[in-house]
Length: 280
Image (cartoon, rainbow, N blue to C red; front, side, top):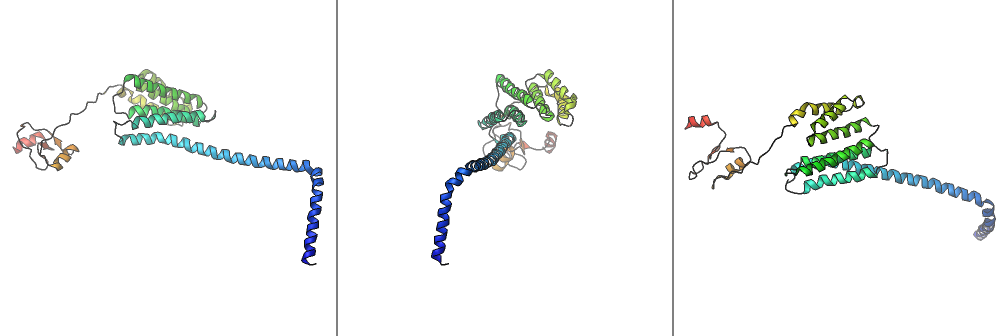
């Protein structure tokens, strides 16, 4: 059979198939439609399942980052200039984001309770790491907001002993920080004696807070140490040693007396007073 005949044969077969197609579709249309619908349903199921899994994984990663950010803020606060607003903004921003994340989590997910607990921690940390003089009302309002976060966490942590103990412990810290020591003692005692919290870290932590509570009741007032003016013409290396605290500078009684530029001296000393008298 030559190529022309083969081509003619294939053309005839295609024409015959096309001519029979309307009848085939009419006869088997319902079956074909059913198969197509099943295929579409299967495809949609796996597609949206994969998409949901990806979304959940992304949300979990974002929530984990938010939780870790509170600890990072604490570490960074140590190196920040206390005069800047970066410290306050960092903790306030974290607290706000944690609240939004908790609100977005489905009911029954314990992650929401953890988010709220970390929010309370962030609000309290802002007060602890702030070196400026804060108004009493500011402190009270901040602790009140932190307490509300812990209370919300308790509602969402039902059935989870660790999270319930963590949120309750946070309420104890809040009470202690505003001077309500009677309430703090009650909260810590309840945690230490609650058998449901056995196996968690919080009974031991609560007992520790009870043990040191009397010391924490004392009020300490820190004063700013006045900066001592160093004499003009002092050796730069000696000035750096005094500024860094390596040498204690006692000052100069005679204003007209030139500083001694000897190592370990220049009206600065690391020796006891009685030793200096013997040398004189």
